[in-house]
Image (cartoon, rainbow, N blue to C red; front, side, top):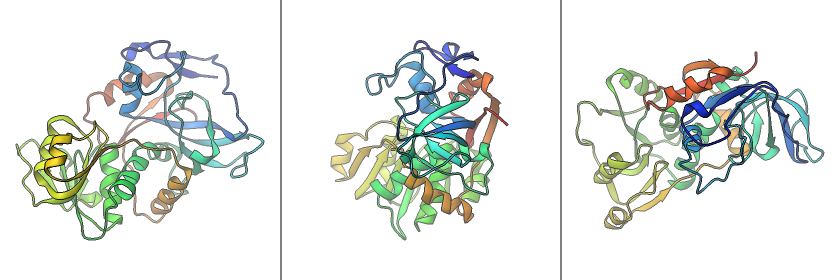
Length: 310
């Protein structure tokens, strides 16, 4: 099958296009998906560069790609939830070959039916980013009606879903973005937008929850607006324990879990028109290298999609 493989850690040049990679080995509880589209996430190039090799041991040659949408071609003998011909989307397993390929094998528990109102490219832009936001705000933060939440980088992949999910949960949303994306994040439901190019500090009332997507200086600054006893979760490094102790905050570094059940719930919101997705750019499979380089700039509105098959 056609695939993008890497044989070593490194820059985007380690990504190689091949047309004769072996098909995935199907386990008893797997579904084999004919990939229509994938997407690029920051974790992809962090894995590629070796930043996460102490956490995730990947075997070479390896195929990256965690987001997938496509059509079920075959099911393992223990699969009861899907059948060939089903249109699906999923967040694949980090430690197995991924979706930068014509086919990918995914555990049935990680898979959900594709939202009926999205095409394959749109559906592929959803799983990892939306699951990250949903699990952070619903499970870790327990975000509730009328609470105030601060979401950094609201126009990015995770941030754009987080704003919409926070509104579904009934929260007041404060976010940051650049001047070009102020109207965009407001269209997603942001109640208060801080233009980071004009404001050196976070000028807003205290918040119950901080969802940090940037880390570093931005994360440290967000403690200044967190209420005492509040919650701060980050996907960009564990929150500073000293600052967390000073605020008596529930602080945690967050990691997304693959979940078909959560994707089912997100599908319901998508089909009800409560969650929409934004595609920043589309690339064919053989141009994944260019897609990685765009993602690494850190200035992408929404998601970068890889078109694998029509």
